[in-house]
Image (cartoon, rainbow, N blue to C red):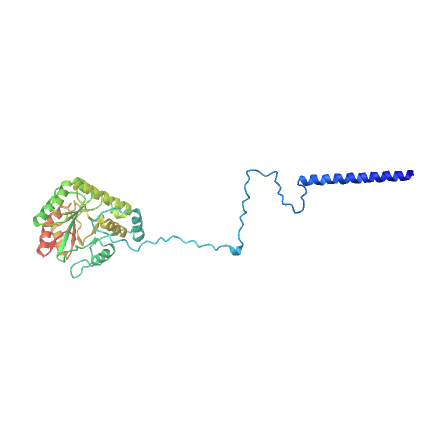
Length: 342
């Protein structure tokens, strides 16, 4: 009997212990599920990250390179074309104007800056024209249009040009008297120094129908053609403006002092609107103090007469003043007319 009681008590204790354990286990599982440490199978509930910042935006996609086989082929780099036109536009003579920096660069690219000395010596053809100048005239006229070595008038016309850089007493006035007496017109090329110092003479030239041409503002030793074309352009325009202000006269012809020019110089002046003038007959009468035999001087000039001749002379030497009446009479008596360069 006592034994059965003990067994019944043990059974009760075991039953109560088992029931308590089951109840405790149920509460534990429910608590863990509420904290998110264990999620029921199939649950879609999203957890919040306790360390996530409220300002943090959506994640940016990571940039990845495509496989090598899908990479686009690189395009070959091509340099912009820098080719210049083969020639400059045909110039309009008489419309004197400045060229742009782009136009100056084009002249630099197309033409040589090598300076050449002009002369009229050498063999003469059946018309007494210098053979060298006949060929040169054709070449220059073809490439630069407004270049004159010969007078462009009829075969029975010639021209006179005088280069004036200094005045020797009344020499130019006396030459003007000889021209006036025969009704002859000439072209007088001047620089700024001569223009400023001899305004009365230049005013007379213009009044009597002679032509004023440009030697440029300055006349540097050896000639302006040795300078960059930008400086050449400014030099020509400075004198152009000065003459317009002093005499209300617009020059249209240009002469390269020291007979020195370059291809760039010719292209520049003709593109600016000038007609560039050379000569087909000349004499070294540019030294005021050098003794010159007047008779020999005259004979040389008479022997060089030819169709469309352009005589180039100076006024500083007294022999030129003494020679000029005989030359004018010889030209006119030979059936030629003396005209401005055409």
